[in-house]
Structure formats: structure tokens, C-alpha cells
Amino acid sequence: SGAAQGTRTPATGAAGEPVPPHASASRVDAAPPPGGPVGPPVELVVHVRPYAQRALLDGVEVATAAQVVHFSLTPGRRHTIQLEHPCCKVFTREVSADEAAGQAELRVPLAPRPALLRVEGDPATRILVGGDFVGTAGESQRTPLSIPVPAGGESPYEAQVRLELQTPGAPPRLVPVKLRAGGDLTVAAPPAEATP
Image 1 (cartoon, rainbow, N blue to C red):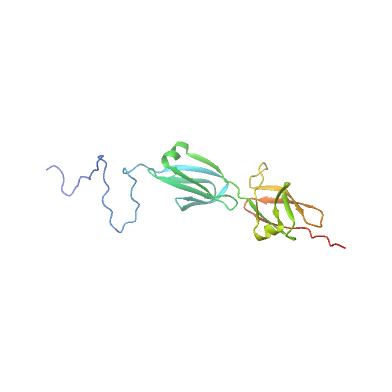
Image 2 (spheres, rainbow, N blue to C red):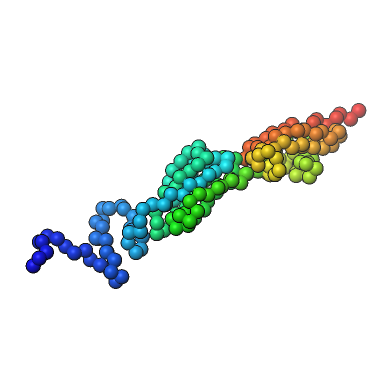
């Protein structure tokens, strides 16, 4: 026979593709995707605004404090990318290497979380933001009020607004404040005037 002894011909499956040898029980390697080897990883570049405090690929941290994140995606399966920033809602997307190869870059403006407002003072004080009633000081003392950062400013992550505080027995008070996405803000309500 012309074949050298000790050389084995790889087993083939129904489609004529090589079948991987059986893994021993002690191995922890992930099983290859169905259909056998599928090629080199595909890079997906993600531009993040404001930036990703943490970037994860399939639950594993791959970058911190980055405006540009490079994800290396293995072909043949879906991956989950996740971008986190304290002022923003978590961004999560499933993507395959094929989809990534088709776009190569992705721009992600992270969605701002609302600011949390607490007003100290008379619980009956009414709170208005931009002329809209949002709650009372008492409600904000139990659970801070969730106030969306108004759109249309220089940054979607912070904006100057005017609070109007209407305390019974006191003139309304206008308070300019800066709302920051995901930030906590505490404001003191004016004291009620003493009745003679």
C-alpha cells in the first residue's frame, strides 16, 4: 500500500466535510459551529457617544472608557455586543459576523437616562419643569422623580432647565438647574411664610 503507516484519513460527514475528532471529557473548548470551520474573525468597529465606560462581547469585557470599540466576531454564530455608561441606558444588540462584514462600522449614540430629582421642604410643594407639573416635593422625597433631559440642547446628556416650585403660602420660586442624564439632583423648596 502506498499510504504511510500511522497516517489516518480524516473522517468525513454526510456533506463530505471533515468531522472533528471527539473531544476528551476534560476539554472546555466550545464546540465548533455547525458546518465546520468558517474562517477568520470579522472586526466590527463601533463609534460610541458619549463613550462606552464598559464594552462587552458575549458577556466578556473587551474595552473600557472607549469612544471607538473594536469587536472581533467569530463567523457562524450570533454575538451579543453591549455598551454601558452611567448616564445612559444600556445598549445591547445581537449581530453576526456576516452582518458585521456588511457594515464594518456602527455608530451608537447611547440613549440618555432621565435625571432623578428630589425637592426638600414642604411635602405639598408642587414641582413644574418647563411649565409641566411633574409631582410634589413629598413624592420626590419618597422616590426621586424621573425627569427626562430635554432634547434640542447642545448635548443630549445635559440641559439647563427652570424648575418652578409652588409652595402653599409662599410665592412661586423659579430655580435654574442643570439636569444631567442619570444624575441625582436635590433642590430646597422655599419655606412657607408664617401667617400672622
